[in-house]
Image (cartoon, rainbow, N blue to C red):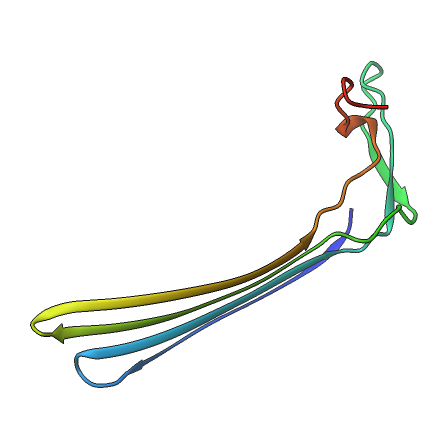
Length: 111
């Protein structure tokens, strides 16, 4: 099927002095389905694969959005020892799509 994706990653660091360093990173990723194709069932016995053709499937287009950030502090001489603190945060949102296709159905569960 069709989709568009974007990814942005950046990392910045700063030396406070000879012993201390701070660093921040950000990663933004997004993928969104175009919702422009519908599946055409194949036939396993005739070795015809499932394919797709242009059309509008039922439901909303699938997507995935992720924002990950981190902050890191390092001190290479804190009371004669090395100290590192690392904090992370992630936001995630997604809508997973599904096809109405016999190729992806469990015959035991199918209607």
